[in-house]
Length: 492
Ligand SMILES: [Zn+2]
Image 1: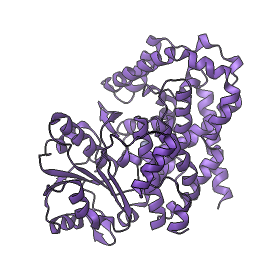
Image 2 (image 1 turned 30 degrees about the vertical axis):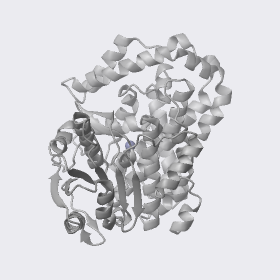
Image 3 (image 1 turned 90 degrees about the vertical axis):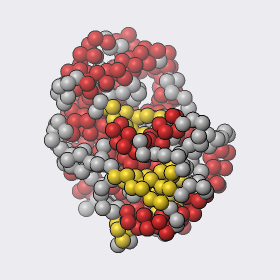
Image 4 (image 1 turned 45 degrees about the vertical axis):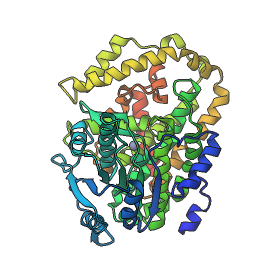
């Protein structure tokens, strides 16, 4: 596959940003770009050398730059990346200040408010912020600039340029950021960078596991699209035609290009950079992470939150999402097979607050005896119980119209076998064991991820209908094991 073949059918190509904007406006019959800070998306193999020109276009009078990065050494085309970026900036006449974010004892930088503060307190008038890193650095920079903008609303917003060093998450083009609060992963509204500058040679030289994570994170499309549709249908969450239009294109595109991306070629990096940009913009247009974050993300977040307790480092986000996704799409298949609206006793689908609070506090006390995590989860879950009560007419409509909406829901996901084959073709891990996560820890996350947040997922329906007991969990895990064995044996 060459770059032309790979992009010839690509209607919404964000690397041609002016044309992209026109096409989205016309597909959605509205203008979702009106208030966005994002003015340029640059995706090509020498993009890093565009940096001085981009800075000049973005902030013509600014001569200072704050470059935010972590400590990880990075290489671009056999040259050390971070000194290269400083050199390009210095030669372009810029004064460079570097902000290095410190990692934990495994060297991993966590997206929390302490890190945001490290960047926030160094922002000053006349300086452009450049986030040179992966999703965590991008999120920290977006949120630090957002705070600064809010405190200085008599000044123009801080110019922010995001330079992805890995094709690992859609964070660069998302107006949301994931920042932990009391150890619980939370999504916050923030702002976009003014420019996303994707240099394909940087992305080509990033560790392969991060590229696989990018494929993995985008697998959320095959779950979240369905769950989001259900939310729109039950009138829990607003629709966004612009997000739906670009995701309808991105879903088949990832299946077609998974094997090319998995080979980590320049063409593959270009495809993934574009697909990730679409994923981030889908959240931006919806002003919510729901289109790209369903139950699989709940599982991945719980795995992160329990990592310290189980004495393992936080694993690759996207890969956790993809492997958790196998369980969720298998759950969808069971749901589509067994769900019989006539057999649902709606009265029985409402849980007692006290019972749920005790359950949540008990589950999270296992990994955080201080009770802070449990309290933070309960705060959101309590809202879910209220939402669930209020959405009863929507649920009753779903039961009454199930025959018509089931095919639509099925069209937004993938059969578990197709989903797993796609991951296998990309060379992506298929089991938690391959990610260094023991099965009992994965089971804990799968079983309890619904407690994490207020968002309604299809799995919540199963919880409310009392489907998800130990037998259900055992069955899904054993189905996942046989599916993975089958896919691996057929394609070797
Ligand atoms: Zn994600």
